[in-house]
Length: 158
Image (tube, rainbow, N blue to C red; front, top):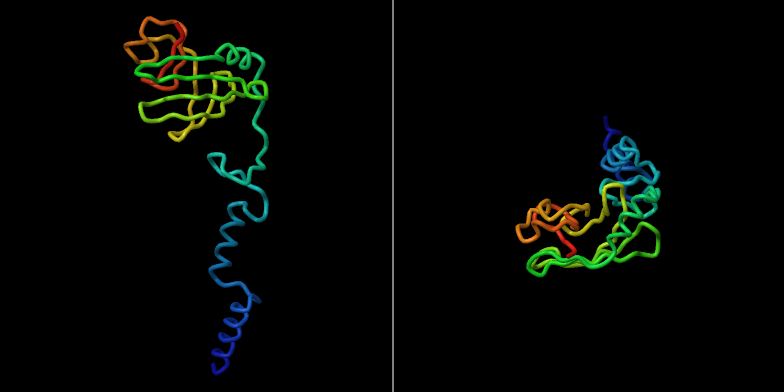
């Protein structure tokens, strides 16, 4: 047993010099391998990653035609508004909006069969065609040409 301390010192020296792998490093490597992170590019949930993920499916012609019909200005209540502009690629849009009394911004959107999908600080959203009643806003009730993001957030054309 007199040689055990020498073996421990040798292992610690190798680890300190980069000549070995620590137990913690081994556990991390094992966890990465088990998770499929052994050098392969992995797309993380929520679109996070290195930006080299597979391209999303291109919008259908019908989705583009519908969304193209929405290009222009839309009005909500209490100064809320939405402006939809075509982007360089077909089926891609720039949404500039005042979506709460305190929050505004411009967001990239993509036509889908259900509307225009986009992400803003409060998460992924879907802009879809509705009528005024479906917006959940009394002021817009009775209007027929509207777009709704979520309950109590809608925009209409007169």
